Length: 505
View 1 (cartoon, one colour):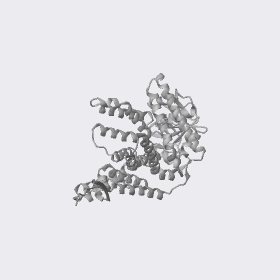
View 2 (cartoon, rainbow, N blue to C red; view 1 turned 180 degrees about the vertical axis):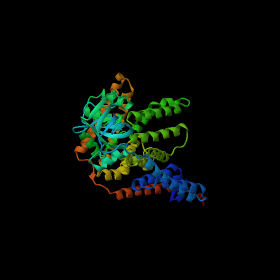
View 3 (cartoon, rainbow, N blue to C red; view 1 turned 90 degrees about the vertical axis):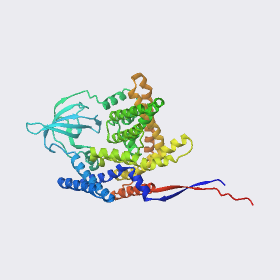
View 4 (cartoon, rainbow, N blue to C red; view 1 turned 90 degrees about the horizontal axis):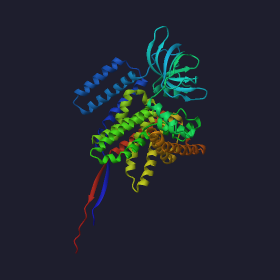
């Protein structure tokens, strides 16, 4: 008889603790986020919070008990999160609804709406009487003047409106993205200076426009490659929203991951050289941040760029990387820079999708066997289902819709997404004659992707209208966390049964 191998599984608190300690930034992130949430609900005296923070740090340093020390550190991180939220929350430097003279720089490509255009602007100065006051306020601009464009500097006589949308949810979203109000620009212009805006993002938009042959395909390709959705028609935006595939139009970790795979494939020969993998990693990091800047530095793509950069640095230094810990570091840095990201729906969805992929998706993908073609299709389906499942409660709570269609058509659409991003990347980097076939391939992929999405929307193959309550959202993610903790606490022990030898009689 041959030996047999069995795996004995049991739950162990020690195994769970080792997994948690291996991702220390996750333990840091949770109380820090709780402090930001505390700041949105309660107003505490800042001096008292600072004193309490110092006391918690001192007690955590002096106490002999490890458990008590962890408790004091958690309290200190919570109070630190509160202070960061209070200090980093954007506040207007000028009075609302008062008619003043404002010096505004248009810092975004205007997007067409019904009867007007919308763009991002920044108020750099204002005056109510005779003296100018400096400012640095991000505002939404409602342009009813066709001559104003990206990079222009406009002096207007008007007011800053505190409310930026008639929809309370969208107004809150804009405020969480750093906007302090809205300014209308029409016939109230006192002076305007037209400039040729030459940021990397603007150059990418103009360069890709040179190859446009179809308006719908170009609008989709432009959104997925450069992050600019100003040319996206309303019908197409709604189709992507109904099918739960709006994340494809917003440059995020998905698009950056495609760039990573393409650049790494191109640099494969370099890894055959002595220390060539280090040079390749440096080039990959540079390419990631080049694409990040080129796509407009949205929160989701910055988060992904930081995370992928840390992964590449871990490979560069030959250190063992922990993906969950890296995600926690990324989220901590971004929330430290701007705590209001925590209430930004795009930040929430991207963070939840990546967390679900790391915690559930990757372990499931590792268990897939068979040929590489089967693995590729199954992996795409699993990643799509897990990402959709982890974002479903927030999507339902925010939009009142459960986008189930995205789970089914994701594998097909993802194939075209790879073609669009890769083709668009080469179209931007290569010189004009050589870039033509890549630009054509990019638009073809966008056309096929639009066809699938529009077909799904027209057939009513979208989702179910249902809005989950806030308590329901908390319970859903509590269940996800509980399942994850149970999986992390599984202790697998290998049991080998030796063969029995029986003497012949």
